[in-house]
Length: 195
Image (tube, rainbow, N blue to C red):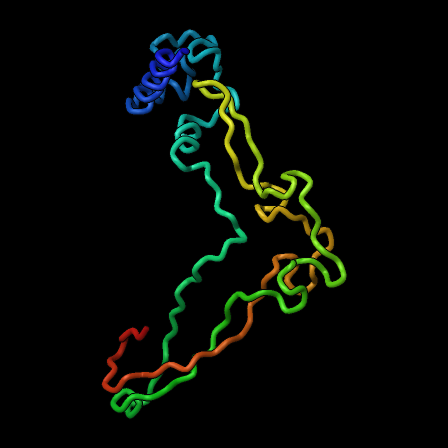
């Protein structure tokens, strides 16, 4: 029921998006401007008046993946590290083994990654009730749209830290010093990268 009408509304929205003049008119005057009316009324798109709406990008991003949020607690691959190592002439010719020192993010040694001061613990977030996401309703030309966004209180963790760890300040991680031995092959050239 009403599928044909919704299709026409989506088609009209697409035409407005793809035509720069119509889009500019829509941005300035709302739906009436996009349709050539410039009448100043609320008109078009089922009573939508443009108030509190950031543009068609909001609708299409929630349809096509822009509204999805990644779980911040999920493991992710770290960034590549790049360091310059100075070699003596003999080391470049015959090869060598060098110790490279660096810092990396690791679980906080004080709170063991909880982010809370020792002796306390995080509590379930009161805004998202532990899910890490909240639903946001937005009025669109197609009607009311609901999308999920990362919770602005717990930042997707699902837990609030009322008394943060003094070492990591509630972030649950800290920079720690590490080192790795790197084998430099014989005949290495200036600027050569080794993985």
